[in-house]
Image (cartoon, rainbow, N blue to C red; front, side, top):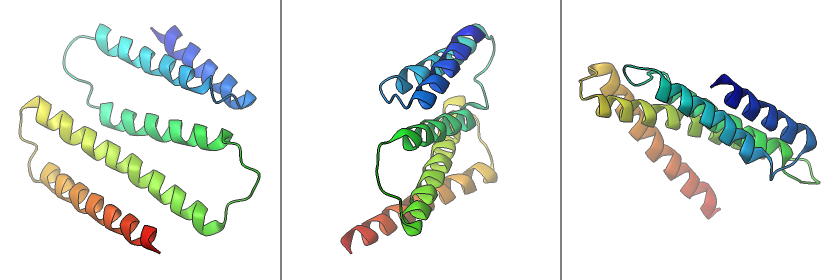
Length: 138
């Protein structure tokens, strides 16, 4: 089980070191397969850490592809800040949506904290869509 995940991690590191964009997804497949195997072999309930792991996996994949993308120019500071902010927001949204899905699938009530997180996630999503729509018009 861990050997699949380690092989995926090694393949990811090799793809990053060699800047091979075609090999990089296979490394992430190996890491994901190792986690899927871990989940299938463990007994009991759903992994409560799954939303955080999904967000981490998403951000790691984005940063990996970002680091090997071929470009011959330097990014402006504003572009870099915007890209990092959007990546952080997308990772946070992934964790929030994953947590809400985990809560809904569990069939139990989460209390006011989960409701507040759901409302905050909805407001942040709408604010982000509005902001992106406003900046694209310029």
